[in-house]
Image 1 (cartoon, rainbow, N blue to C red):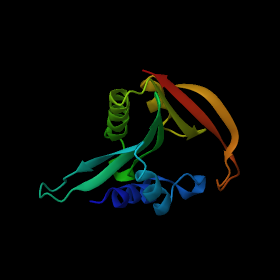
Image 2: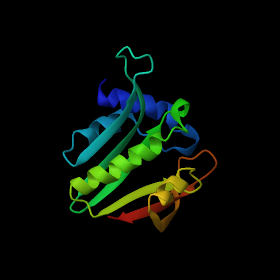
Image 3: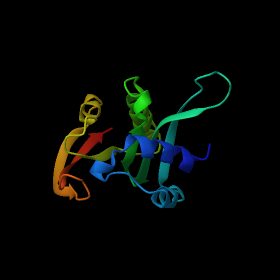
Image 4: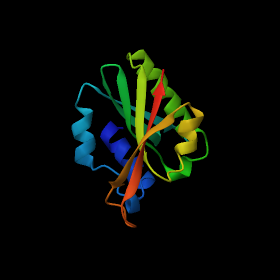
Length: 149
């Protein structure tokens, strides 16, 4: 499966349009051509027939000794199975291998994934007021998290 197609399947199901966080196909395509951008797909073969199905993904970019998690998503039907945690652990391990010493991510305030990030050692280091302006119920603050490897 083409990585852009796979990411967009997850994007359409996992990112609630009410929060305005999802990226467009063009944005994903544009960022994937950059050599500093990395992605990982979580795939399954539910019937054992070689027909793989995308479960989730991560998308990140590295600059110097810092890597930023741009997006993580898990399709709703696959949630609660540890896929998000496995993707995050792989992101951390791969970033370390690429030479990152500091990892960053940003999320909207109130996102349920906060407990996952904190369980992996990420700590909140900043808040951007009213950052997510496309949210249906008004602007939502963004929280920046950091992990030092």
